[in-house]
Amino acid sequence: MMKTDKQKLAVALFAMTVGGGILLVGLGAIEVDPASVHAPMWVIGVAGMTFIGGGAALLFERHRLLANLGGLTVVTSLMTVAFWVAFNAPAEEIQGGIPLLSAETNGRIGKVLFGFGGFLCLALLLHGLRRLDQDPD
Image (cartoon, rainbow, N blue to C red):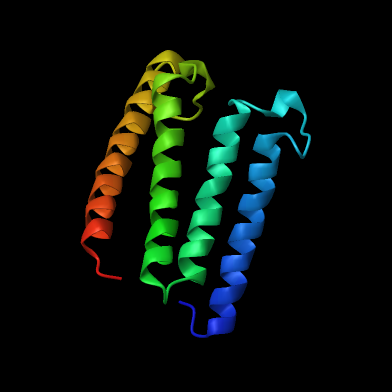
């Protein structure tokens, strides 16, 4: 738990810096080995936006609208990546899983779980947008 404003600022700036780096990879401004990339560059850029939004939410916690927009950026980014994995990623790219099940079955289970996560994020996004519309700030 962060106790001081300096700690919150440090964490927020760190998250935004990490997210900015990932976003720059997604935009092609920072080159990476293509063999290490398992998603389209736009998906990587969206993943970077997760960290930027989280840092912004923390940085602007005293400004409700900006903090809420940061949080909505996090949820939207997570939803986008989850839906991309669920509907577009090859099942064989999903690693890990339940022992004794085939890689194909584990890949399908992974895609279903990512889809569930995407719909959960969609519900959070819709709830957040509704609350954003109701906030007087």
